[in-house]
Image 1 (tube, rainbow, N blue to C red):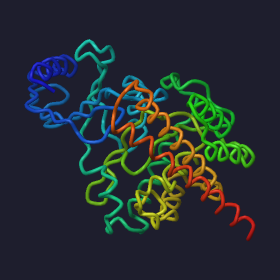
Image 2 (tube, rainbow, N blue to C red; image 1 turned 60 degrees about the vertical axis):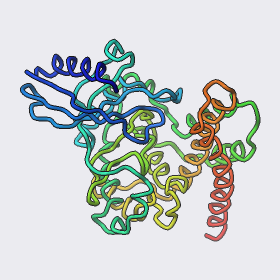
Image 3 (cartoon, rainbow, N blue to C red; image 1 turned 180 degrees about the vertical axis):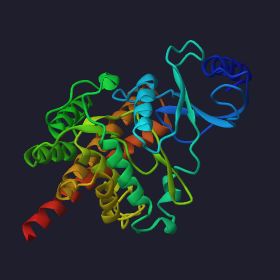
Image 4 (cartoon, rainbow, N blue to C red; image 1 turned 120 degrees about the vertical axis):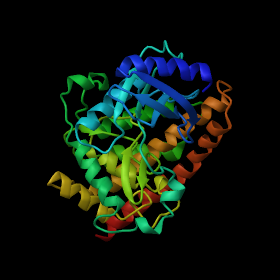
Length: 344
């Protein structure tokens, strides 16, 4: 971010917050964020509602994106709803919805301390299983999120509430795969299995739909902020649980089945403690299969953007290669589920 852009953003923040003086003394592009750019802003603020604030994060669009993701205006509203519900999220501070300041819509939020790096988190032995550990904290956080239920006029952009979230996700994934230039039988087979084994639907709630290690911040073993709300929507609460526990998001720490950072039991216990009730945990493996198929389809769609020549990017190309891992994982997961059922 050059000096001219920093100056216009500072002037906009001045008018938005009622400050007497705002100076952006530095701006650093943060790592991660394939779909969005996140800039760490160093601030000098005097007066107004941000008086004394030293750092904040500006979030805007990256060059690449995913069609199903929300824009920055919608993400700001989701973050605001989560913050008002008492979730551990960065406080949303100001929204620029038009793109007239920098050429792209953006919003500014509080900086969350710590790291979101999954390689760091999944290799930290101090985050191991315990009733008060990180997995339990995340379970409680999910329960707070799932208290947010339709109807909500402030979330009308999410569209109609699905009567059967699993059926809707399966239909969406068939549609994604149908747009690709070649067939992927393992993923198609996985979708057919999901169709045949689909459980009875539960009441839809607000789900993050990308709640995984890498999309939350941790400092000294404590959750400090849930990030990246661009895929949130109405769904079965088990979609969030299955996505978090899916093997593809353990980053090699397979023995820690809850996101590579803890045990399922601690995740579930934290959820039950906050919610005051339990979900049908026996259905989580089903939603893990759906999560794996979904990530495989997203990876293929991202890779095709590179392969087609529409957007040449080594990151997109490498993402597309992840689909082969997901194909194998789908076959292994289903075989394991069927073997377990046969032995019951």
